[in-house]
Length: 567
Image (cartoon, rainbow, N blue to C red; front, side, top):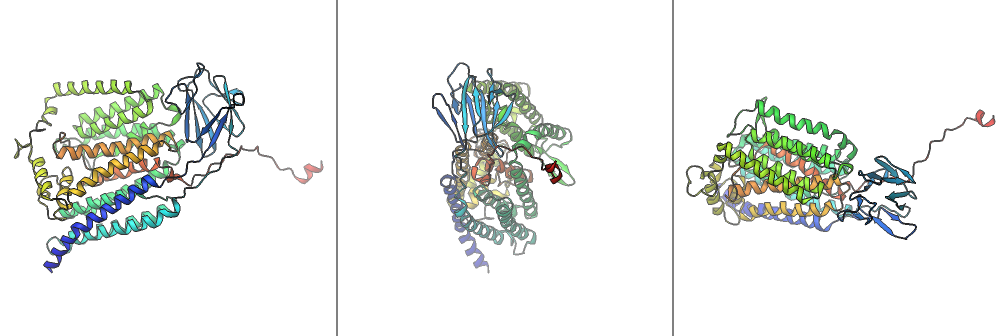
């Protein structure tokens, strides 16, 4: 029997790696080569000059600025004059505080107005006629080929979980029921989500979910092998994360609703951090954790979702100085609260995410440079007047000189990671698992040691490729909101991954942030799945069943009775 387990452990090293490689390659091919159709949604026709402007994007900015989608080089046109948006009820036009105003059918609009086929639209004296009579919505052809491929991918990830189940459920020759239940539950969860999303949410692509399930399964295997009692808790966190993903993705279909609740979300995020600062007990030198009924929560992880939700303001407030200032105040309050909580890793992530959102909203590099300079000066002042902050990073670049003190975790991570070779020692056979925070901060080292350096290389590369695909998709997103929130979400995950990987390898100071989807921690898992909803919303295939109604609404006609007709 012992010989069989040795053989199975050896085979599983290669099987897990092959499955992971196949899933990632299949997902990457799907993301980059299976694109939705790009229909022409309408045209703006100048009846005098004959100029024709094609409307392909869900939102087209109009102005004198060269960064606008439609550039009109006349003095009467403001730098950002208007935005033409494609919504469920047809086209809408927004006046973005232009000097000359926007007219529809010869009448000046106040803020926004619906426009229909044949309507005359004016910008600072220039007048165009909207033409949508030749528009035809083209369905996403990827529906026909998506399901069989993802069906097979789910089978492979299920096998991946079964292998991990067998490797972790018999630690001392005794069967661990709770560990096995976690992996079986993971398999049921994946298939349940697949059929639910296909039937009720009408989702046809599962690239991001496949990667998330693969990485979450890897993290579950590591947690189960190190902390068997924590496997079921990690699984329940994944369940909550998937539920949050479904709820948020459904909510993201309705941009108008998002616009209404964002202020509530902003106030709630600031309040949640404030409460945490007051009631949290110090854990590893930080006031980041709150215990409620025996369950530990890290509110800063949940606030990440709110941070992006609030920051990705809808189009009529895009490039508005006043609203950008309000968001700067919101971001500053969140970062300051995190500093007082000594959660410097989260503060860095929040600040980086703010920079991404601020740049996408303003498009002004000078503004971003001023913000960065101000933040750098603030950081210098904090270090000068708060020496204990600098002490947190005293071991940076000196880990080998302090192998048994401040550099203990990182030196062991580097040594044991290299010992795993290309294919790893096998799940549960590593030595790094005996080091404190192995399944949390040092989990990347555990992956390299037990799953192999190839797997360790695969994780950051996958995040980078998803980021590239998200940026490409953002150019054709249904809304500016989706573009900003999706790019911000993947930037956050990518930056967080970089802080974790570079931190444990001493390329950056160790900040104690988690590796997305893999590290032990319920709050982190929930946050990552929710952020995935923002990333998925960028892809136009996600809402491919969107069928606009471009017909001009007809006035309601009251039916007359027979007696009324006779009279």
